[in-house]
Image 1 (cartoon, helix red, strand yellow):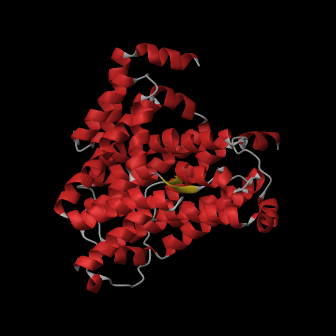
Image 2 (cartoon, helix red, strand yellow):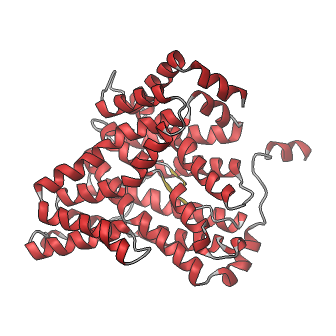
Image 3 (spheres, one colour):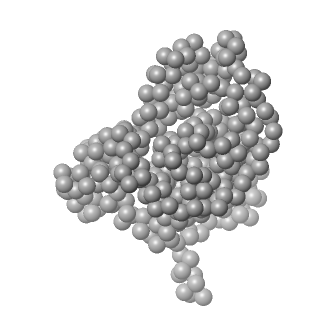
Length: 416
């Protein structure tokens, strides 16, 4: 018994599901419900558009894209429910938005089955890092500034697409930008991306640009995907995606929760992110994992003065996420009626804060700056060597440059 107990020691013990369920009713109030709804609206608007754009860029069908959305939203919602009810902490599940942004280019030329295999492998890598406790050692050799430099480089095209698409469709895209920048100033806490979507749709309807007859509201079920393993996709997708999950998403969520005074189950968060990645990959979806931004929303003081009850916000978010995933085909039908220029702008504005944070985390610490810059420019280049995409080479190039130019930064990090 002692050895069994020791073998499971990487799972931190929580109050348990019984306690979480029995106390849920008294913690569901206007503040926790509002925070959960706001987090869900954030997660189901811009990030969904980024994922849809990645899937269509890679050349996947509507049915495959719907299955992708099902995997990340249903399993992301389940992670919120499991973690929230067991630990009574607002640990929110979703998926890596930066990861979704890099996948369109990274998966181009690869089949959906190969994509699924790379997502499953990313989940396995994350799970192994959590179970073995190797995450800390890996991140010492793959510092966060280099990871974020890679993300900034791979995602920069989302920012430039705002400019080019607005030039192509100034009225509709201009209206979306007005909504994004001005509505939140007039209506506090109104989600900026939702405002951009509303203004853009109104402008489309006013100019006759909405292809309403193209909307086909039919339910499309998810599909179990038979993975086809390919070393190129493992290196191009699995490694960078796993690095993002443990080095950015989980790290951000852990930091947010610690700042709020929670005792954070770091191993449990990493392990469930790995399991979520494996299961979501079976539906052709990239990692369902702990989400930094939505955890921040649900754990903030906006979710209530009593921090012990804020987990209810994460539960609300989880339910809404799962429902969205179940009916993702209707969201796809709506998006298909929107012109590409508006989709580009909506996806772009959804990535603004992610891009800003990537640059801040990549270059703000004054450590590994040369490596972060190398990762940035390699990511921007979109280079593919041996059919392995730029995200992988950005990480490799960034580490090599830092080892040559900034060995002292590695030495300092090793000493901590």
